[in-house]
Amino acid sequence: MRRIGWRRQERTVKFEDEPVPGYPLPILPGHTSPGRFERVLRAGGFAVTTELAPPDSADPEEVYKRARVFDGYVDAINATDGSGANCHMSSLAVCALLTRVGYAPIMQIACRDKNRIAIQGDILGGAAMGVCNMLCLTGDGVQAGDHPQAKPVFDLDCVSLLDIARTLRDDHHFQSGRKISFAPRVFLGAAENPTGLPYAWRPQRLAKKVAAGAQFIQTQYCYDLPLLRGFMDHVEALGLFDKVYILVGVGPLRSAKTADWMRRNVPGMHVPDAIIERLSGAQDQAREGRNICIELIQSMREIRGVSGVHIMAYRQEESVAEIVDKSGILNGRPPWYPERDTTQYSHRTGS
Image (cartoon, rainbow, N blue to C red; front, side, top):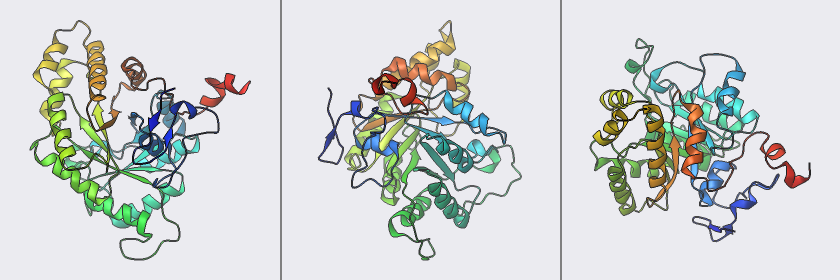
């Protein structure tokens, strides 16, 4: 049985113990949340996260339907917060629904639409509903979305939001200094773009986010492995490997046309010519896009300091299961999902 050492802990655990019903990975001193996502990372597991696009609807079943396609393949699900400055069901509401049935959501908080009063209230409210993971983002400008006439707030940016969230959790008071009676128990994250210009600035910006309170990082799409390796080398040189968990963003490209559009229109997006040429020459470009994603994930796992992958498969969510399976990154470890222990593992309890 493979033994995996606890990162920054002296104890070792066996991941095979986790699927036993009622016996999850333990919460140890130093954990800031009771969530499974943090426990998997601290146990040295290669974590897998993904994104759920919130519906344009008030029907909770639409959220659950979108979440179910990830069952058994991911450790946590991001609920996006007005991604691209477009209006959808709120991240807080999606997370509240997901926690009702036991999923591990990551609540995205964008600074674009709310001031520090509303954001601090959302942090407390999300934690009260069982949200254990929060991703702090500055947010896209309103001009990019479907309500360009909206008034942007940007009272905070990512770094100041992280500092406020950490103060709520660790110092038990609002930014104003007023005490709170029970602190949110949350695992805090931020985003970064290893392949965005200027390259040398990106590790330094990540360091500022870690200093402000980021415990995990989810990156923008990374399709250039040499650039990613260079970024990780700089992150290691800054002494950050023992301070933050980095999950690299990746996703299936549907076609060469899509890839070219993304690199021309998405700020900071970099897709090498070789990948576009490979897609262009494929008979089934969507299949080739999934193959490229699988190969990238397998290579990313071998890069020092990479703690997992964040699979973003917008409008291709059903492909996440295939990508995870064929990449082999879970190494037989089945992430929890509703009804898991009464279906896949029912033979262990004799039921």
